[in-house]
Image 1 (cartoon, rainbow, N blue to C red):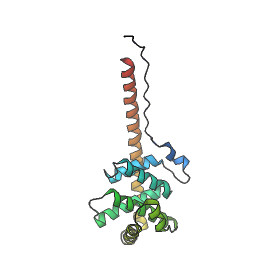
Image 2: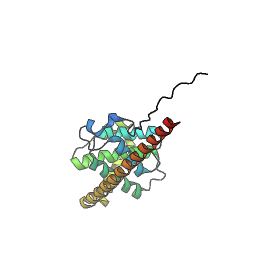
Image 3: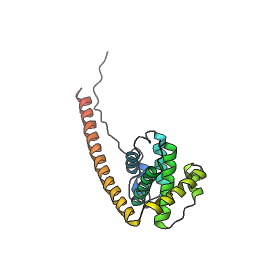
Length: 190
């Protein structure tokens, strides 16, 4: 049997599977969509393990067109909502609906832009009754438990968590690049 010469193999790691969602390509966004999805996944734990749920969250971030501080505000609002309303177990469906309402609420309450809840129901595929009920809960929650000062400090906490998350993500990427280079060297050295 004839032997073929070895061809060097190069494995290039990719950390950003969907470059179409880059922040610089989306006007008004000051973050990368994939980075924010990863950050929010860390917030919600293991709920968004399925690719379909990641895509729903990515699409919601894409269509909401919220700047980073509003996403943080919505996340903090959701934490309060989960705590005070004791939503257990948290399912992908009710979490997706909660993100939709939190993003809508962050946009309308922070910018004085009243978004029509029916538009959000249409965009997210969540029943309008669910979104309306969540909207009422979020409004009650913010009027009862959060002052502007609390919101400011909550956003600062989220900003610090975001910076730590991005630092860890860069470190993970660096480690993945090192592992990929090692695999290449091992394959080429065979």
